Image (cartoon, rainbow, N blue to C red):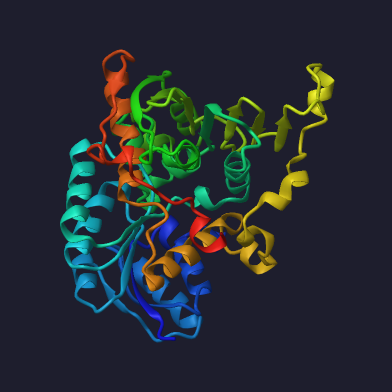
Length: 416
């Protein structure tokens, strides 16, 4: 079987784990672990030291030296079968459109967008070209999210009424460190105040609620706290105090967003990245027959097993392994090596699915309409906050097709 030739655009922390002690966080390492299917033939980044490090990593895996370029347009002319985009957030849409216009299938990293018009441009480009585009929301492939999705699809939670999720991650060092590493979050937190990273928590929830496939977001309201955490962290850190101590950050420490869905469900999102805390996505699903909570790894069904006393509910903490039989095949058969391949195995599984969809010409499991719907929450939340937390209408990027459109779950194509 001839391997797919992949062009890689963006080789920083997410792209190639540049400067990171834990190399598994980078997509490049996981692409190389899918070596039965693909070979990386071109790498692109505007910083030459990143190019050299990525090329060295590719050669160390036994491959030929890849072409190296600082111009992403060169990648479009290098005979690749697909491109992977892991640039800064503000370049995702621009590069994806160039690839689609060139007829090259695209896998685009996650992040929000500050421009609703960019969302429409992405949709229009896809509808004009038909070029496949895949949104790399890895959390849709995570074990916990896969389990709760399966529980919903099997009807064990009944009719879903409410969902919530967080992106709660202490990123103070990463943001401040951007002054040395070129990390784009420093600029983002300086210039914007919004739900800037919605898709980790929202993507799996949107899948569960069939958003863009019989359901849609109708309106949202966002609210942001004051910004204090980053400033305090910086002025107490000798490494950054002199260079960033006078920086004013627009981004509030805690941003909360409520979304209303056409079918009557509501969603709560929280962005919490500039205060001390443990990592948490907090995916929670409440239905008429049951409840799932990622934080406590709990499944509580309306079967009489747990009564309404507090101590009884505590017995459900960490019981989700009792429902492991509902996990998709990828999680039933995952190996230790794959678990260590990146973000607990979900990166490996996500990329495996993308490459198989591409090779077998299957529908992309997270398509352009889902991508822009989730990404648009960033711009919409900024609009709501700026106007005093007023309700904001959510666009229908399917132009009405959501009423009859059928999407696929992330594990549906290959495991059913």
